[in-house]
Image (cartoon, rainbow, N blue to C red; front, side):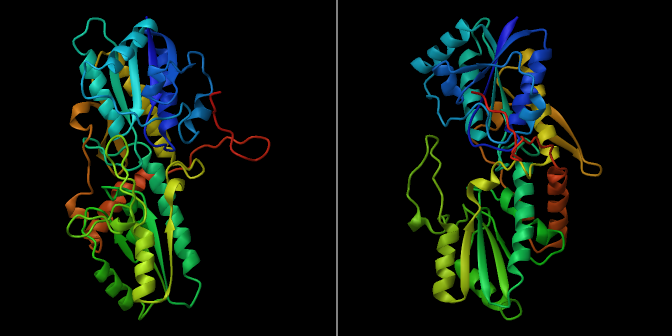
Length: 402
């Protein structure tokens, strides 16, 4: 019998702990596993031996409903050179703890870690099996129908946008509210914020995703035209919107800093457009950056998302126990009516360091057929209220590993 180690990495979601709970549940039931360790702060927890013994952990339902990352996270990029001492350090730790299985829960960059570790161990005798369990609110991982974490973030954005539009409709004043939503390269989250409009409403009035070149002058013309018959306008923009030359909108306001994986730190598209409207049109205008709130709201989590996250974790353990080195658990949609999916395995090399964009056929957001297709894709993912656990003080009671 072997030890299973599990770690979380990248950005938090409302469902990543549901996947952790699924991993623990399946590992506890497996005859091949006798001990379960959680690694604090991702792969760094392996390197520094920061472990939590989860072998007898029992609060799986509460963990499933706990947002963010109970084990903590990191953004550590493994070296490209397999002869690096980092890999030997991982191998030594795995050997010392009798690790036969390692499940890494994370997004695109975390799957890069799975890819590199599995390549390092692939031809070694009695090597640990490395498996990925994907999550990302950005929903930009190729090869799958959707990623866990996205459904809850989409639900948060759809409900928040619906309420925001109600708030902004009450005054007889010409105004513009610009809502900046996460999404460096892909506009999946911004489409979710557009659900109130796609379902038959009038707002948000303008929806801008990174895949479609954004023209600020065209936006100003649209605002002037709509203000002839309306008062409060709402604009939903992805943080990563670009002009026709591929430059980020408001790029002059960006810091230029990048993370270890080379991703730019983005902020400022909404604020840039706010100043532009104020200068060129002069009406009341504000920008709202939803920022971190959209990532892991436990109170607005999707029950579908948490259930799928739990099952994904269970399936990842199954792949590991079958010796499926370098694979990733994924979700494939079978049908929309009724909503039905299946879990499947794919080579992590097919998706690591790659981006899944909103398909071009969805770029025409005024098309009734496109609106219907987007709704059929999104609505099943945001269905159902997740269970909540409350303490005596009325605040949520979440799992915290001391």
